Amino acid sequence: MFKKILIANRGEIALRIIRTAKEMGIKTVAVYSTADKESLHVRFADEAVCIGPPPSPLSYLNMPNIIAAAEITNADAIHPGYGFLSENAKFSEICRSHGIKFIGASPEMINSMGDKASAKDTMKKSGVPVIPGSDGLISSAEEGIELAKDIGYPVIIKATAGGGGRGMRIIWADEEFEKNWDSARQEAKAAFGNDGIYMEKYVEEPRHIEIQLAGDQYGNVCHLSERDCSIQRRHQKLLEESPSPFITAELREKMGAAAVAGAKSIKYEGLGTIEFLVDKHHNFYFMEMNTRIQVEHPVTEEVINYDLVKEQILIAAGVPISGKNYYPTKHAIECRINAEDPYNNFRPTPGKIEVLHKPGGHGVRVDTHIYAGYTIPSNYDSMIAKMIVSAQTREEAIIKMERALGEFIIEGPGLKTTIPLHVKLMQNEDFKKGNFTTAFMNTFDINK
Ligand code: MV4
Image 1 (cartoon, rainbow, N blue to C red):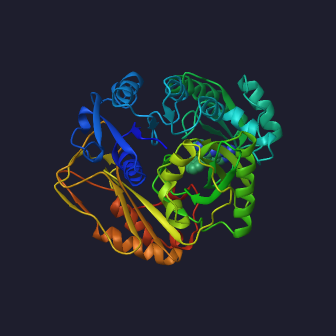
Image 2 (cartoon, rainbow, N blue to C red):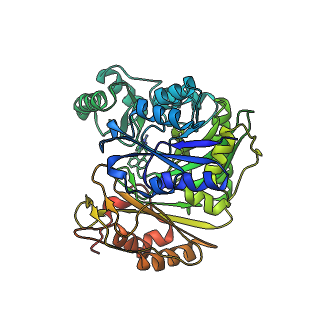
Image 3 (cartoon, helix red, strand yellow):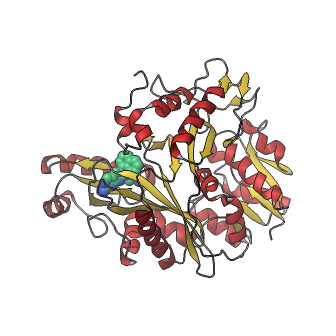
């Protein structure tokens, strides 16, 4: 087993990883930017190394500084968390060449799943359902228009290096093709340095449901059921739950089996997630594979009663997984608490937290790095906490979440949070019925 892990991240996920490492008897090294000097991940780790100034490229994305921190502290593994370097093939490769175990995917795996068009092709070949569309990239607007005659409008064009909605355009008619093609290519080129574009039939008002997977180096792969992530705004998830209120036991079996087959075909090692789009007829289609631990992993932990970060560390250390699938025994919901004003276009509100009360009680978990006196820096993501509740049924979980949200007090000059938005969601009749798709937030009005 590893003796010492360096955590190449900040905020709640750095703390989350430190907690599990401690329970496993593994020493921890925090790295931090000067903006995070007073952060809890710095305080709770056994050692801490400053890796640079506040802008991420100079600190949390600064590979030489992070590798140097691992070398001077003698860390034998690096956990990248999510975001930052978690899906950076070059960093995974540099760790390997320095004899440091990267607790995440191999560079080859990151590259093959990071190119969305080729990931789709790989999944299709192993029998995973994919959305009808182009075979790989399309090379001109004319080619796209020709193909749209077969597929039928609406179609969607996507950047192969993309994900999370950037470089994506929905097209409804021939006349709109060329201008969308040009702008998608430009956006992709600027954002990813790769203007490769592929095309698909556009699935209207789908659900976003993802399957959690674990694989080991001996070829065992299992699924750990699904999360429903349909409640999102502009590709930022707001709330996730497990199990999905839309999924039957039969569909879970089918989606789980497809995801396992896909992951086995690429000899997937470690924790991963396959994202599916699910239409109203229960058809499901491969969208992307994530090769990292995700923000929303706690809802899975709560319903299957297992520590996924521990699973990840064990797999990285070469311990075989059991190979059996895990099924929900409860219902869990996670609300992302962001320092943003939901009444004002989700404008970020960094600054000092003067008053803090964290909720508690049976079935309530708060994953956060904030404390009274903490200053939320403006340099990073605005998520400041995740509250996860679990209960026997979805109805009870919703009641519990509303109760716990009412106990969550976060105050400071100018500080706003997404807590009132989540309260309104818990009271929404369509949400309560499980009647929602990825379009839900387009029409949700917090003032109603
Ligand atoms: C789609 C789609 C409909 N049809 N592909 C959004 C982010 C990227 N991962 C892919 N996305 C979508 N791809 C086809 N063929 C709808 C979306 C989409 C979406 C997907 C998941 C969660 C939220 C979403 C919001 C808008 C669009």
